[in-house]
Image (cartoon, rainbow, N blue to C red; front, side, top):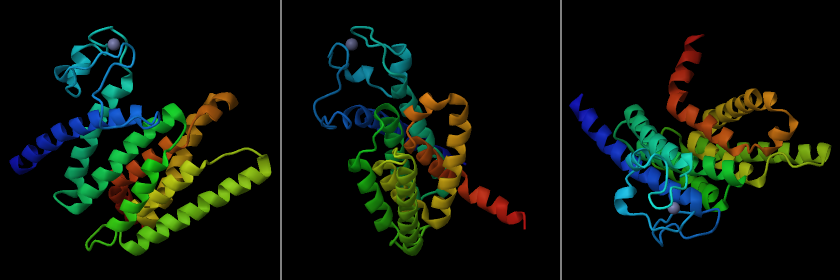
Length: 254
Ligand SMILES: [Zn+2]
């Protein structure tokens, strides 16, 4: 028990610090600012944020979500990302234990969390994120003992890429409108590289299902505002966090 709790607490703290860094990425990557320099500043008043006002989770709560200098509201994603990142990291550790698979999925969720919010706010999935993710996913599959071997990784990635490209092409032909963007197509290839054939198939079905139930009640105009990237990432996360359990549940039916 204690051998699990101590690393889990440590991973939570490290995860919260990473979450704080991901917020910087979410804010700066789309506006092409450096993610390393300069130090964080309030987007409203440019006040340089003091280190003790930059403690993940706690600072947001202590400052009640406002800038300590000008009281401008700090966007809710800062708090959410600082909270979900450590929860995701600890969950991955509890599922996959001390292994390279844990590192693999921590990397995957890191990119995934940043992509969800950038796509949500800016409706883009930067190549800077999707392409490295794709290459890391393919490369890591060559390592012996991975949950997804290189064949499943390459086929899952390639097949999903072709499938999305085909849908995008057909949709464009039929409606003269863009459905899946290039960013979504590269993202699904990266998801395929990490989760293999079963994972990417699950992701496509589950994210489409999720998009349908969430978007249908919204009406035509609001539907168009919604990016598909967050649905894809959440579909893939569902597989990473619950996939093996869902899979064995399904196999037990027979
Ligand atoms: Zn301020």
